[in-house]
Image 1 (cartoon, one colour):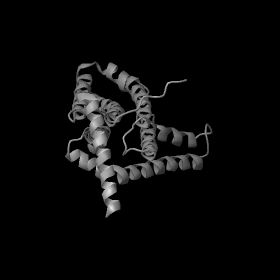
Image 2: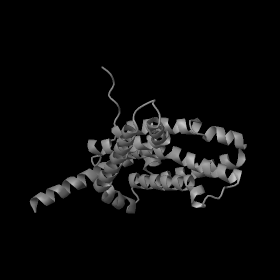
Image 3: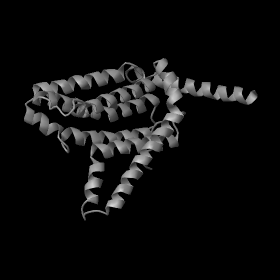
Amino acid sequence: MDIQYSFSERELAAERSVADGTRERGRLFASASLPMALVAASALLALIIGVALPPPVVEGVLKEGGLVENATVVVYAFAMLAIWLVRDPHFDRASAVASTVVLTACVAREISLRRWIIEAGDSTFCCAVETSASLAVIVVLALALASAWLVRRHAAQVWRGLLRRRPVPTTLFAIFCATALSQFFDRLPALLSGQSLPVRSALVALSLEEILELIIPALVIVAAFQAGVRKPRAAV
């Protein structure tokens, strides 16, 4: 009973520390409405881009290897740095490693690494087909293990925080919503049973997909600031 009581006291102290840190970071990052507002603003911007700009411009900006995709990769790099600077007592190094694996998998998908591995296996450029298949399996397995570990470690805490409208859990929920919406628009042609969309509708769907994918790592950075980040040590 004494051990259980002490553990509860430590948990309460950690919660108070997180709450105090959240208040110190000001109203902007502490706002539970900020993440969903960012998702909504991104969706609105994507609609404007898809509807108002000429089709060649939209295609040029949103194409693979284009401006938006390259910007997304850069923001993911900053997101990885941000999670390693988090000083939340509930988010340890193991959580940072697992989160880095997940973000790395997101970057791999963004740059179409899976297709590159498959194409490399079909040619003499990189490696044998068996090696390419093994690399793909390793990437998928690492992602599955990291995701399962994060869910097991943090799901209950995030759910409780979401019910209390805590900033970090609300931002994680916004990341989930942005991911689900971007995947929906990515698979929209398949959901229509192969029916082709009108050109403008296809551009709007592409714009929504790409802009929402861009906001995901930005929301990771927001969550890191909400949890609290330590300043990098200055060189001596």
